[in-house]
Image (tube, rainbow, N blue to C red; front, top):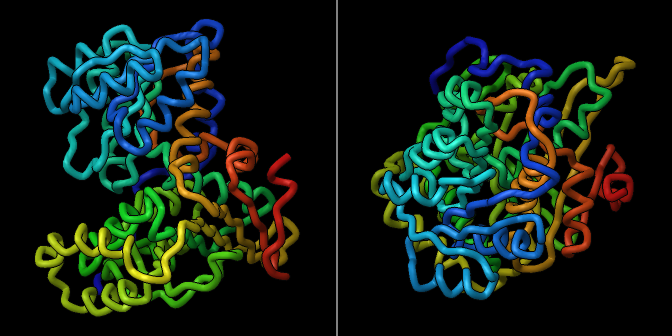
Length: 399
């Protein structure tokens, strides 16, 4: 393991969290919204919600012309054929937009052409990426975004949008943060479960740059990090290290000494395979296996559609007393609602009022835990809190 002592790449301070106050654009909540990747799981969900808003002029953009047109007809939206990195098609699709939402993952194989085209068109831009380099690299567009007065936000999905909202809620009265743990628990039979399993397997055997004990270290993706107790019905799962934007962003945003991002899988066979594969230290040999194993996990016995997220913070409160707290979000059903909710909240905000300034930022601290739960509770999600005495329903967060 290699170690490197230095400051995190994004300076901590209120500027990371206060962008929520600046987000917003449009005239009276009205405007054209372009959803790229509209026929995918998350794009389809966002499009369906926006189609019910009479103030939104909805444009669906996708590389699949037949499915895209069928969906546009069903939602009474306009369709625009678009297959990044086709720059002309992207420019045509985003022209005249107030907000562009990019849900066309996976982002590991994508450049920032859509974001740049959106800025050039004077449109706000959001994406649902959770790939580390893609999300953290959005700051490279900050100068252009400021010049055009638009907001460019990357990572408006579960990681880092929801995870950072949980950390903000847990550290409201903290004077210092020693440790942050972000743990995903996908349901292997859910729509997004296979994709989450594939992401976890993609990290296996790869070097991960991790902020631990106040310094950067290089550790192994897929390492066994013990166990995590989720609220019922998920229960306790073995957890393994995985790559995520949180590893880069949360140390600076919350001045934490250690940040871990983990995944707890349902299928025991996949879990055990993940541990053994990590020891091979040959990620290039594992890449073809990742998607196949993820697909296999959806048909292995014992799987459910129950998924969740647990965020734990250890530190010291303002009175000088130790704190060890957890928040959890649990879904008992199939669906991408959680991954889409931060983006939907930001779209409404961007259409409602003009931003004070333009900027390009990762989605850290831009939505609140209470906002998220208010949207997700009616969709079958439950919020839980543990202040040291075990999990209890987090009714306060749902108010």
